[in-house]
Each structure stands twice: as structure tokens, then as C-alpha cells.
Length: 356
Image (cartoon, rainbow, N blue to C red; front, side, top):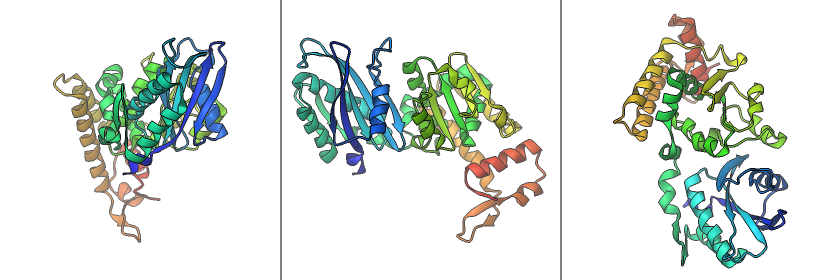
């Protein structure tokens, strides 16, 4: 089972009673860049009003999950005010790792020893499970249903997102469809992270892990990592990101309920009758109280499949390997309205079936 070896590393960062932050323990190892990143993200440096209990994000191809715990007198950690447990993994699965983080954190509070926690960590790596006397059993298989690329559907807010932006939701849908760069802004970290899973859920045929950057600060190392990708959905809580049009094609400002298309992206984001039909369709879905979140996601996925099938029907030429492709000549011969012609061209490029 590949899920047993998705874990990469585990760290403990402590804040003592004097407010000093200490890198306490690592297994087996992390890079200096990863260490610097999670020290910044764990929010134990005293500059934050409140520590978030659980946050997650990515660095390159690795995902980090941070669980912060306040230490009480009854815990076996004298001199420690609070600590952050960090798990590094190859897979995107916040539910799974939040559960494991909490179990490991409770064990560390009780024993005060990284050794007892490491035993549980290694058990999960090698057996896919670990058992504790007080906190029950953790089973990787309980979360296997969530390891496919539709895993975020369970935590998505598609209906709420559509109600928030109405017909303009089509801008988000189109940006995802055409593999544009989307930045989602919210000043509140907790609220922002809760929203991030919704965006990939609008595009079922793509893998969320390929495009999602749940939390990016305007730091050079994080921006370098982000810019190495040609398309993404990135969450940012720095209001200054609005001025950084080099980072996005579409900016979604959640508190202001505004969607901004950057000037350089407006031509490829031109709306057609097809867009308007899909926009109306999504609004009607969101207004249907009888439909669940899962059903709305499925309906949108079916509409996307229908659109992609129409595009593939234009694939009339083949590569030497036999792959069906869309040619510019085929599009021109259709004499389509310019905006629709441009949209289908860009969609074929995004789906890698355009013969250039």
C-alpha cells in the first residue's frame, strides 16, 4: 500500500515559558529551507494574536501539516508553554494528517518523550495504523477513500461560493478550466484555509494536489516555489497580493466578494454564450436546496465533461503516436464567433490536445 510510505518526516518545535522558540526534535531529517518555512508557519514567534490549532501547506512536492498544542500543568512538559508538531508527507490529505497530528501531540503531552511518539509514527509508516491506550487507534485505511483527486469534495463549499459570487463564479470556473493562476485572498488564515479546498472541487477531472497552494506568504522562497508552476490556486492573507499582478491571472477577494481579472489575462477570459449558460446552470444548482454539496460537484463535473467531449469531437488529426488532436484549421473551418474560437483554442491547449 503506497499510503503507508507517504510520510516523509516529523518535527517538534517548542515555545518555552520565556517565549523562546526552540527546534526540539526531527526524524529523520528536513532541509534548512523546510526548517525555515515551518518555523515561520507554526506561528509560535509571538507576532501572532492567536495560534491556529491546525494549518497546512506545501513546499515543492512535499506537504506540511502543523498542529499547535497549548501545554497545561497536568502535561509532562515542564517549562514548555506550547509546541507545534509538524508532519511532512507526499500526499494532500488534511483530514488524515490533522487526526494523526492530534494523536501524536496528545502522546507527547502525556509522556514528554519524542521516543514514544516516534514509535507511533513508525507504526503508521510500516503497518498503516497505531494504537494508544487513551486516544484509540489511527487507521490509514479510514482515510483511503479521501486519497483520490476528489478528496476535497467532503470539505468544499461550492454552493456557498456560487451564492457569494453569483454569475461571476464563471470567472473562477473558467480560470480553473484554462489552467490559469488564481490567488485567493482572505486576511483571516483559518477562514482562508477552510475555503481553499472548494476551488479544486469545481474541476473534478484535475488533481487538487497538482494546483493547490493553500497558504503562501509574500516571502521570496515561497514565491519562487509558486512561480515555478504555470497554473495554481494559491491562498494568501497579505492584502498586498492584490498589487502583485505578476502572481495571478484572477484574484478572488473573499472578504470584499470581488473577482478581479488581471489586464494581461482579460483577452483569454472573454466570456461567450457557453460561459453564460454554465454560469446560469451553476447559480441554479446553488439555489436548489435539495442538492447536496456532493451532488452539486457532480453536476458541475458532468457539465465540464460535456464541454470537453464537444472539444474532443473537434479532434480530427492524429499525432504519430495516434493521439487525437485539434488543429487550427479545424477551428477556422467552423467559422465560430471569435470569442468562442479563442476559448476553444485555449481550452485545447490546457487539455494538451491542441496541434500547435
